[in-house]
Image (cartoon, one colour):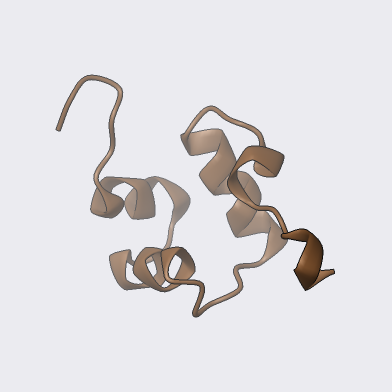
Length: 59
């Protein structure tokens, strides 16, 4: 783990979910609540728009 980097387990702990939940979110097999999305963005010091988006063909 490098400086400024979190493992999935560390990120999950900061967000208050399990590592398995983080894996499912990453695999697009689970749609997190807006609260979880905001917590992930906050933990990663980024915007929700940079983390979660829809492709044009998904709209």
